[in-house]
Length: 325
Image (tube, rainbow, N blue to C red):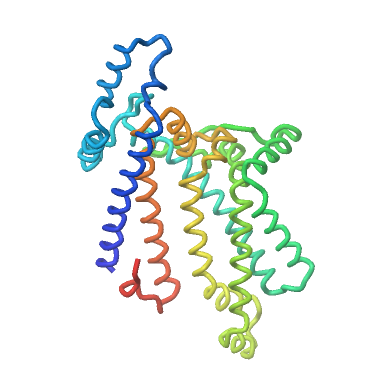
């Protein structure tokens, strides 16, 4: 196990280095951040002074080496726009994104897994066909359209929920959470539903396929022959054996939500990392973009590592020592 973890961490380091070079070079080619930061009345002398202050007057390779030498010390530079440490800005927004992702994936699992099992147990029933039709709609409808429709119905016409923002937050140490307040839940429910619709649809289809595959197995037939109740068979025998694909998809989709919830956060003005990334790309705020992507790569690698470790907990036959990353 320790050797496996070390190997995964070394792979993560390599991926982070390659990704940082590509992003750094891409942002360098796209444009000059000084054009975004300087006022229209700025003279050439003013522009040169801004470049010198930000370190943009050096060649690209030299800028990258300076960045890399600081990044080793966990100093990812300062935001061109805000003048604050780039990683500090990202970490301030991270609780909001993690909060949204946890609620959205929680709703997806609570709804998707039971409905998927129901559709797998009775594939020809009208209810199962309705569930699969609904999951197809969940796949097909784009997030931005779903979000706008939820705002129109529940925020504008019915007035049940706010249309944007995060609501009241409560500080717990270094974290500020909104899900511990009623106002916070009223603000988070619509963006969480927007994400959960697509993720729940995927879980429905994965759970149904796993259920259909497990039902003909000998251990299910033997349990039925012993006269065990369907409830016990489903809880102890079926659900336990279909958890690996569910955990895999849930872990991967959780990482996708954390990393790329840009559209949903923008529609609902959710103050998370995705909205910060979009604003930083628009203004070519290079330190924030590179620091964000480095953090996300590390987060996704760690998340996949946790999922792999869960495999050995759910299924003792899995041996991480022999698994190739």
